[in-house]
Amino acid sequence: MAPLGSDRPRPLPPSGRQLELTHGEQRAVVVEVGGGLREYELAGQAVLDGYAESERCRSGRGQILLPWPNRLRDGRYEWAGERQQLPLSEAARGNAIHGLVRWANWTVAERSQAHATMAYVLHPQDGYPFMLDLRVAYSLGEDGLTVQTTATNVGAEACPYGVGAHPYLTVGAETIDDCVLRAPAGRRLLADERAIPVGSEAVDGTEYDFRTPRRIGAQQLDTAFADLQRDPDGLARVTLASVTSETAQLPRSLTLWLDGAYSHLMLFTGDTLPDTNRRRRSLAVEPMTCAPNAFQSGDGLRRLEPGESFTSHWGIECA
Image (cartoon, rainbow, N blue to C red):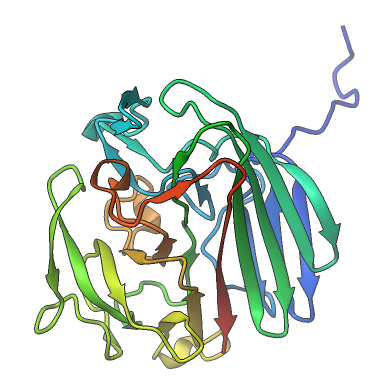
């Protein structure tokens, strides 16, 4: 038996290997578990409300959601005439949630001071008998953070595919109530008690219309949006800004942009987070290439043929 006080191996971080990226005043940390983004900061101030190296990722913070984002009712769907059943990873609501790669060990395919590409092969399994080669590239540059996700069908059959991301944005305010939000979405999806879409409505004249910047206030959001308005460069931009003098030393405005591959957007104010001290502390702004429950509804769902690749981009600009 080793004597008390002897050297012990340093505990491994719950999120695995940590890859620090830097560019000027920007710093990001990419992790092995899930290939996710644990931290992103500018000039020492948090841009993402992430989690500590000693903590396990909770509430999807910074995770990549593959091969579907959000929820799938009962974990069931039909593809090519065959019924598939996925594990119910959101047991309380009877849903499969956020894909199959969040807790997998990804490998480092490329690495430099301001760039890292994480790789993972999703092998056939019960409920998803298909094979995908996955690459998620994180890059820091003069314009901020860019995240590129590429999925290639390396199997013998066509497969269903969707991707999402789950960053929580913070501008340093104690709560997001006094923050100003602009979200260029013309339609919201109506959801049932299991957070599954059952219809949609235009946001015109409703409390869900954030196309003109306005204060979030006490409004609770756990809402998927569609009909995203694009700027001339083809990008949709969501902006979160602080308005109080107490946060003047912090990044006052963040813009999350998403390219045309992302047809839907989820906004979540965090009112139901299990960690009560983190509720409404930040805003989850989640790009999605398809709607929740797309494996059943087909809303935005991609069909990847054997050998076909699909690439999507999103990123964050700080002002």
